[in-house]
Image (cartoon, rainbow over all chains, first blue to last red):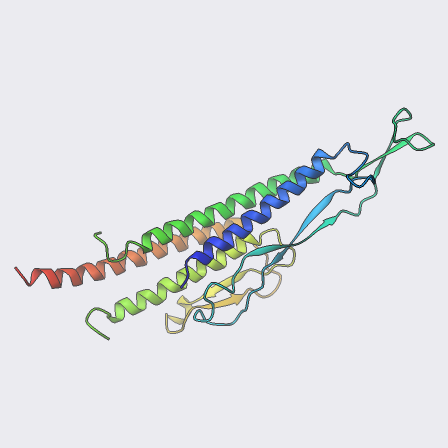
Amino acid sequence: MDYRAAFQISASGMALEKTRLDVTSMNLANVHSTQGADGKLFRPMRVVAQEATAAFGATFETLSGTTLKGVRIASIEEVGAAPRSVYEPGHPQADDKGFVAYPAVDQVSEMVNVMTAVRAYEANVVAMNAAKAMSVKALEIGGQS
Amino acid sequence: MTPIETSTVGAVALALDAALLRHQAIAANIANVNTAGYQPVRVSFEEHLGAQAPRLERVEGEAKVELDVEVAHLSANTVHYQALLRGLNKQFSILGTAINEGKR
């Protein structure tokens, strides 16, 4: 059986959690942006994860590491929350009533996202280190012990 | 079945494959810890007393990935794998004794 598949599964998990952290950092960095890159209001984003396809019920002869593939990013979608309106008459982006639209970034849920992403990343690292320990031990079969 | 390839070696090799597949299943569960609607996977092998090849199964029902449980399974599986390897090494060292001690 191919022991490298375990590394790839954990690597996919780490890549996903890193993307989640990137997107959350982007949301937090733009909490006071009144304009996005396209000139419109910045919209907070969310990573939607999806299991990478796998076949089930098969025995391990046909499960040669290519079927369990871990996780992949399905999409990065905008959060459909309404923008915050703040009364700032002197602001250059203010409308005729003096309100400025700020992105609907929820700092509390973004911080929770940071924490869960970091913890999930750590768990993937633990799984990868276990795979490494197992592989190193397997390479010692038949050696002097 | 040769003197070197005994039933012990075959059984331990099957159990090692099962442990490696279980590791992959746990790693996939951990990778999908934040995936909405993901159902964890398990490997069944010891229940069949090693008579069948290890089988990958989807947990039915409203199950979700519990990160601490998965990491605990991961640690247990790693130790189990290393114990199997120690047994296999012992088997080969017995063979080595049989080969080397005769020439003295």
